[in-house]
Length: 257
Image (cartoon, rainbow, N blue to C red; front, side, top):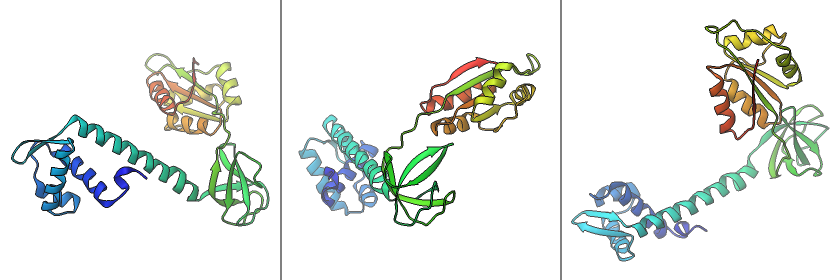
């Protein structure tokens, strides 16, 4: 258990020190009492304890400042609380949440299932053969949606390939397509366009865009699900697309139409 969550007193001392750090150097004990939910007398006792421990130093009447030792203690406790919160949300609650998957065969509620991504969508296979498993919460026939909970393991998934083609804006030249763009688009699972010129360049290549808005975000989401993506963007908008891909930690190639 995290130290500051061991008991109510530890948690209250942590909160009082946080309030002092937030309000220093002019510290109103009544305001801290209201914020923490204890009496002013209790706040005074906590402050004396924090001073004795070297976490707070008194500069004058009602003027306190958190010491370096106190700051280090706050950072340590806050890091522990954050790790504990991550454990609760990811490991505990994450395994309890329910998600939807497409059944690859008939499944009954309570059955163990193996989970995998196909065509960007979560699928459930009867049995526990895969590296990621769960438990069905509903009945489903093949091809139907099945509820799944009790997630365990990691879905083995390679990110898709992303190619960003740049096209000049209309002020520079009329948008035109190319054979290389058509070939890449034909081989991709998702084709996205950012800008009217990008749509025109695709059409000139004999390709219709699947997506014509939020191209970077869509590309990042699709590639993270294992789909290959082609994005055509004007040079003015290409930066937004690549920023979204970088933020998602995805590799990409940039080419000219």
